[in-house]
Amino acid sequence: MENIENSNFELLAKYLAGETNDLEDSKIETWLEASEDNRRAFEESKNAFEKAGTYYRMKRFDANSAWKNVQAQTDPSKSKSVPLRKFREEVATQFYKYAAVILVALLLGSVGYYIGFRNRVPAFYSEIISAEKQVLQEYVLPDGSVVALNSNSKLTFPGKFRDDVREVSIVGEAFFDVKPNPEKPFVINAGDAQVKVLGTSFSVSAYPENEAVEVIVETGKVQVISKDPEKQEAIREIFLTPGEKGTLISKTRILEKTLNTDPNFLSWKTHDLVFDKVPLGEVIGCLEKTYHIQIELSEPELGNLLYEGHFDQKPADFVLDVIRLTFNLDLTGDNEHFTLASRKNGQ
Image 1 (cartoon, helix red, strand yellow):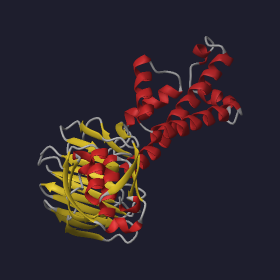
Image 2 (cartoon, rainbow, N blue to C red):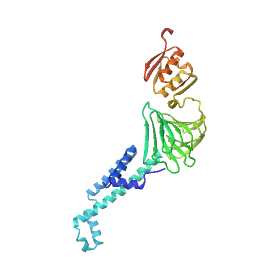
Image 3 (cartoon, rainbow, N blue to C red):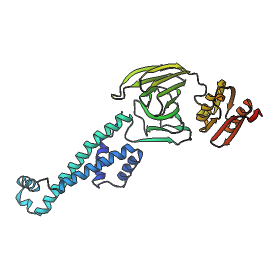
């Protein structure tokens, strides 16, 4: 785990004191744009810096005493060459400038540690976000690993991975094709679960509104760890091989391993759909997730109809039209909202 480094403390302190150059200003601005946590840390540091200035203006610092101490330790003949008032002002100004720098550094140290510990990422990192009803098919990470994001998902990762680990965080759903590197494990933080691999392909579903985190392995071997949300320590772990699914129930902290029985777990990415005598209600749920549409069955009993079929890279309206013909139904709607209903009078 990496945190905000000491050099960054000093840079931010210089920035708040108005002593940075154009290049240093650019570094600070890039850091601020990286995340909301960074902006929050900056505002807290700015407030601390301003409080230090307020302290000075309230004259809590005894400039007269400071001047006497300095004057007693200097050559009186040399001190005459500097105006008394000016020298006293410089002493007080320098004192508070460096006091503020120390205060900012201490504050950033605690804030930086909190950010780094909670997110398990360095202070300087990037976020890839997919919007509602948007799928990002392929994004190449700094190590060459490839990730696809389902809708409403966010991937957080450093601009440069550490020497001993490749660590990212996911909120939502993603498919990872990890580039093998036995010397540097790939670690994914997903809610209260942590996934560790060396080189493999698998999916992770960790939407905050869901009650569970799911990991389904396509190739290779994956370790899934249940973390203590308070101490951030591992409390349980399982190992998954191709065709297996790991599920962490958030409330009970139960971590279990089962066989994956859903052939369409990646349909949001591949648009390859396989149904083998599946109830129409489940088919509709899969289509809604795959195409990001809404489908209504006008009669609840229609959900019990068993459907069998295979669609590879077909648009949603084509799939729905085939289902309509199969069960002799009416199909209404277009774009994102559809309704399937029994034909009137059996026509």
